[in-house]
Amino acid sequence: MSEKRFKRPSVANGDGLILYCNQYSYYCHKVLQALHEKGIRFTKYEIDVTNDEHFSEWFLELNPRAELPVLQNGLLIVPGSNRILDYLEENYPKNKSLRMPIETDKLVVGFRQTIERLPIGVITIGSFLHSQHTSSPKFPFVLPVRQTILARDETLAHRLRAYATAYPAFAEVLLKKADFHDRKRAIIASEEYFCKLLTALDEFLTSVEQYLATIDVDRCWLAGTADTFTMVDISIGTLLHRLYVLGLEDRFWGEGKRPQVARYFAKSCQRESFQCVLPSKVSILRTVWINTPPVYKAGLAAVSSVLISSTLLKR
Image (cartoon, one colour):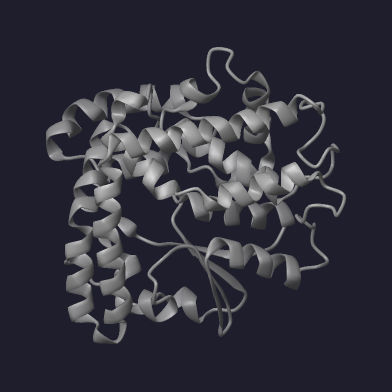
């Protein structure tokens, strides 16, 4: 268990929308971009996942599953990215809609459904374990940080069982998560399974490439018009960005592979709502420093400021 003790933050007693999130979370990225895209005012509270704040008693009271993101609106708590996105669409009808039009191509509708089923956590940790399949991981997922994340992932089940003992009211859920994590680690350790995931992503992105070839990527979004930016655009943009920072872009769209996907990703990265979600350079450097083992820190300090400028999309 983490020695750091967390208390319920004062922001939790405030009015208006509060999003509990982590800036490097794939699922939080989607919600943050949707909030910016829709122009909804909200307060962002960054959960310290490095020190297990999401397993602290105050957060477990908010979401017993200890998962991010979580949206709070007064006494109403909405956990999970998909539920939050649905809540925003249903309860903020005067703001820009991100729903796909009824006439949207069924193939495009299927894209979002496929993405929602992807095991992003497995793909992320798998890329750390089987790094021979990646080319150039980007900040903050550079080698020292990956090693720290892997070390914490290795002890997660043990920590979950310790938290279950410390917080009996949440023991059942935490113990189930610990058992699930043990099973998941056994799966992730298999390079064969990871390669099957990469093959499935290849097939999916080939479908996306073929669809994009039928529209004007420079002018249109996936729904087929210039001004119809929807949740499927956020979903695919977020997926491509995760693959990019993991160092998998060369496999999927680098060196002329899937040129339409490459153009679409570049276009997605330029959108204002996407840029609003990207961590700042200072934030990334701080995260890398905190998560870097002492043996690496002397060399890292000398090169980080140069390397980070060459790998960030902007910000």
